[in-house]
Length: 201
Image 1 (cartoon, helix red, strand yellow):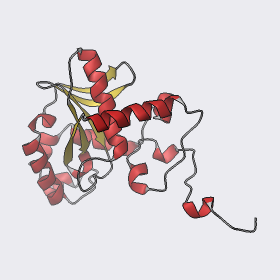
Image 2 (cartoon, rainbow, N blue to C red):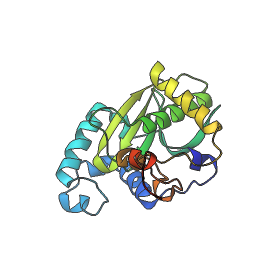
Image 3 (cartoon, rainbow, N blue to C red):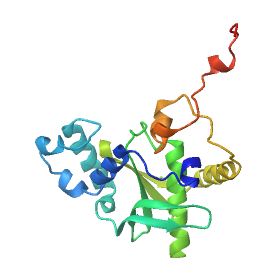
């Protein structure tokens, strides 16, 4: 959020590859292995196709959004939602990273709540869920705007408002991989060992 807030808004190429995949779910769900091999998938074509079929079965609307690449300005947050859905209203966040075993990663849940909140502000209507699309895996996860997730979003807002510089980088590839700015993050990754070092220097 620090990098997005300061205007460093051009994510790495793999994010655009993920968005390109997310825009073509309908065609890719029935594409051949050879055709899928031309895309920047994170899994084998057969696994991608299987994952995507299950995702579209559970969430059919994600393949046919009402709007794409839509800038949403909310009361507290703004940004470009990869997709905006109607009936019921929802927003999608597309990421090139991999999904956890269940649910979504915490930072992505915060972004999903932010997108849903901005959409609700624009529509002046309640939005009770969002989606996180792990497009290169063919996996789509629904994020319900529970009290706990809204509280995490409010904590993130308070933290970002108090930042003078980039936050400390986590020593966690999965969480850093979920961030669009991980390749240009200026904060050094610190391990517990380095913080508690008894070295002679």
